[in-house]
Length: 367
Image 1 (tube, rainbow, N blue to C red):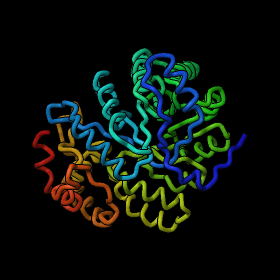
Image 2: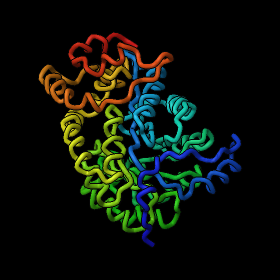
Image 3: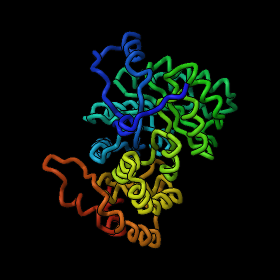
């Protein structure tokens, strides 16, 4: 059955807080979560958080908490961690639990929190799933099993187990490549029909806009999202998608574009999207290193370190010149500052306009 969404629903912030539940563990909590979250609707910009590290590869918890605050202040309708750009595969289980607890305890207002639970083995994924539910996550997200030869029916069983263990909405992240088999749309739709908790998807298999449209037309989904740095956001929204899950370095700009489109101001949305597109191109070229470099520039991270990578900086002088030129167009739209006791500091405000080259020393000075 196709479900029509009223315009006011399209404008609703995705992360409506769940009704207060007593902090229980085990089956009672999961049973209550089933009733509260089965058909929850998610919409908007669900920002993928990056994981900050010190120069000696330790998880920088203070920077992570500052990143959460930054995204909330930027208007994100949802926060997602840890996924591919969160370097989940180099984090220990203890670090993932700790990071989830930081995210879930930080005041977020109506911003939803989605915890990534995929691992190389199913039992660890189920432990992380239960931990997310017990700490009142709004949803979980998982790549398919990605190690060895995995059949599509094994993938289906995996997602059924995740849904059962959490009692929460479960996002199926369909990325393909080294991260599990590329899932056909009919399988994802079948899983959503079987269990409404699986009526949520982050689609990254081309052609993404057309696949999102298929999900929407099925009438089985409560959250249909893309990734890929949000590069097709406006095309996807026109096809009925719920939003996108980009890296978080330009979360405030992404939110402004989404809100303009949601309110029918398409000319303004396209004009702002044009200003962001060169940054999307740079991210598509340099990946996670670029996202972290921007978070350093914006005063969120102390270092752009990636765990296990010797080089902190991925941009050379020509890249920095390109970034600085396009940055000038975006400066008026960079609305979010980190939350400090006395408001944004002068140094943080300066970080918005300071050329990246002048921040090179600070990005390698330790955390």
